[in-house]
Amino acid sequence: MGGGSILVIILTTFMLVEQHTAQAANLIFFIPTAITAIIVHFKNGNVDKKIGMKILLTIIIGAIGGAMLTSLIESKNLKKYFGIFLLVVGILEMIITIKNIIKNRKENVK
Amino acid sequence: MNNKENKKIKVPDTKVRYFIFLRKIEKRCETMVYVIGLIGGFVSGFFGAGGGLILLPAMVNILKVDEYKARGTTLASIFVATLIASIFYAQNNYFDMSLSLKLAIGGIVGGFLGAKITNKIPKDILAIAFNIFLLYVSIRMIFAK
Image (cartoon, rainbow over all chains, first blue to last red; front, side, top):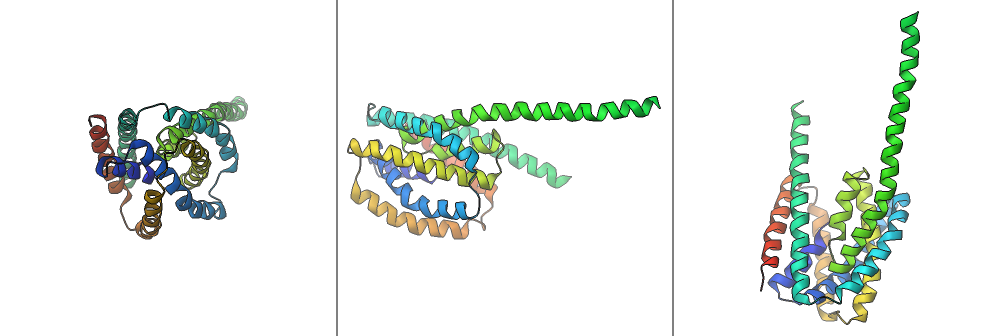
């Protein structure tokens, strides 16, 4: 998880590909690499169909809205927005990870 | 006698309270599912990446789905969002086929290697390293010319 964002980051900051092109490349890249993983998850019963169906309802609306909106925004600005998004996610994930580590240590001590 | 009767009444009382508490969480989760889906889908469409970064922690921490199931469900739902977003990206001619092809070849090899070593690396260190990298790059992206 998180492979897609790394790919977009590498393409835009280190290989200087346009933000929109990098995002499109990531979308195409995701499809073949995810198919095998999804099949394995399905076979192992690791897909919650109840929650999955509910999420599908709104995720489709969100994806259409996001994809339509992204074409209206300049690549330079989109890169900045992506940076802000990553910063927020990074801070939140850092808090969750540190919390989990502390929790695990406490359980180990007990 | 009095004590025994009191105990008999108290036991179902706490159980009922617990049940009501569970129902409240369940109801809140039911509406949260749709909100999480909407945000995850929007991010997937808008940034072409990162939907999983939102869906997975949201499922584990808010919907309290077991982590393995959350992974599978996230992957399957992001897949659908990706398919739909790709159609719109294709309409706007954002695709660079030779770049995508090279990436796909690298991705297959990388995915294979990653799956092989995933259990050999301490997850905490990996998560912190990934987060530090995210923070560094995000600041670079925000202040890039």
